Length: 209
View 1 (cartoon, rainbow, N blue to C red):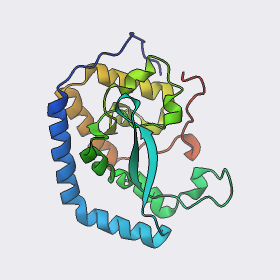
View 2 (view 1 turned 120 degrees about the horizontal axis):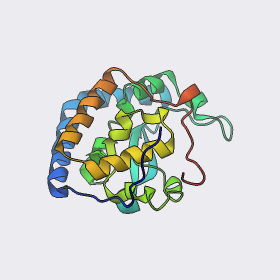
View 3 (view 1 turned 180 degrees about the vertical axis):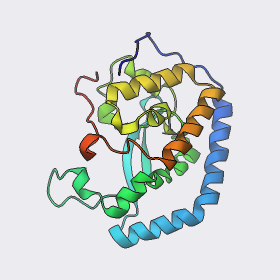
């Protein structure tokens, strides 16, 4: 899959309106899903122990780092370098398949770290390998869901994902956002691309390309 390179990414939008919608969505989501969140937290505590939440540094708007929140889905490694696929539990796989492990990121949205829709936040060491064009991905807040997420998720290579994210940033609008929401609902009902081929997510290319 290839995408035309069209030069620098230009961001257009009303960020204050988007931020208001983000806060309202996150607050409502946390209130409605509170019983489910408690149930999942208790299951994780029972099956995996403490801590219930997985915390990791990610790069957000303009590359500013923040701590992303997820429900834990993996056991601690039994030996150095143990593959993630071997550490994911049955409960963890179910949470990932339903995207329930991502729900704590509603707190990240309330904090202003993330938006409802945008590029998924990546690791700082991955951001350091971005090309100048790919750094355009940092011009908006990362999202809970996004255009690349609904177009293939981890089944796509990193370069393809980033190009899809850049397309979204250049073309984002109410219509595009509504399409992302509808496709996200469909992806939740019929999960695809949760993990890459063979159960292993593609690594970020060393050159950033």
